[in-house]
Length: 465
Ligand code: FRU
Image: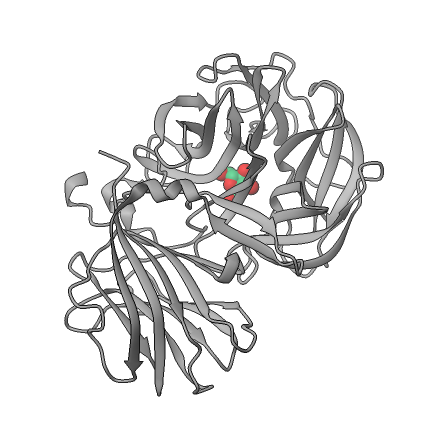
């Protein structure tokens, strides 16, 4: 059956089979990158949560390992929900939310599991380490993200109170006894009930707070500001989305031994069509991305350069003038596993939309567009003709000053697109499910003309056998 699956990804991290959602426990431990994930090993649909586990030496090729955590104890019998990993003096320590069966304890409680070898994990015999939400929280109390700062452990946990979402902070000397510090930040109260999967980290001379609210148009918010360890208060200066696509959620970050802040997201979303379930799997991770602050204070999100190792021979196109109504600019270029780096001059027509299209069918019915709308100053990914199970246009504001060119860096896999624009200022990730034979690539402009300065394309090697 798997052989007939047209949408199984070729160079993205996925579970060997069945369901996956959030990335968990991202860490570089004893030289190896570890990626755990929310996993239901017995079905392609969400169910009692386990932690799947994979390791990598380069963030590109992943080796699957046995399941790290399975529901087994009174404190997690209904599931091992999302969480994080820390290196506690050579012990790989996972902090996760145990879902205790209704009636015993509180439902969502924070637990530990340890490993010396990074392969087998034992749950801490003193679990839970945080057995109930504080007064500022609700029974939605989950997804602990722990880190060390000046000899103390800290953890942020997603919660809410009376319909207002919040992030709560705890402090500990030993990861076992935790003191509640306070509310890091809270929403304005207009949306939903919990901020899931919080993450808080230093970036340059600022702090970044990331939360997943799971509401339309605000799937994965980042806030840039300042953070005070004593009061636990975060003061927000600016905000945006870590990714403006339809399929990006529950992102988690970690710092590796080169000092890079690397982030990986679940490249799907609750409620999305997942036609791959018919082939026994659902869910994937985005490519790993590096976060940084640009000189003007904007957040930059760029794919890790390690991904260059996937490249086969390059094809290069230079200086092509594209006319509206014409097509076939890239000759025989075709593919469903490609990396494309393009640079365009901005066209004269303010009303134009221009860019690249991929997964084009020969009858013209299917295509996925990466475009720039000059008047709106926005980057778009149009997947309204990307196959039956995808729809809609993703948009991301990208203002390009006069004289600036549009730069697109695209990763295309069998059922996903990820585009990074100008220094990582705009990022969009979407799943698409086009027909197997829709493999064309082309340039387009909606009116007038546009000049492509340069396009480099690589076919990419698969990481899975
Ligand atoms: C986010 C989330 C988390 C939870 C997990 C359950 O996608 O809802 O809040 O821990 O998924 O699988």
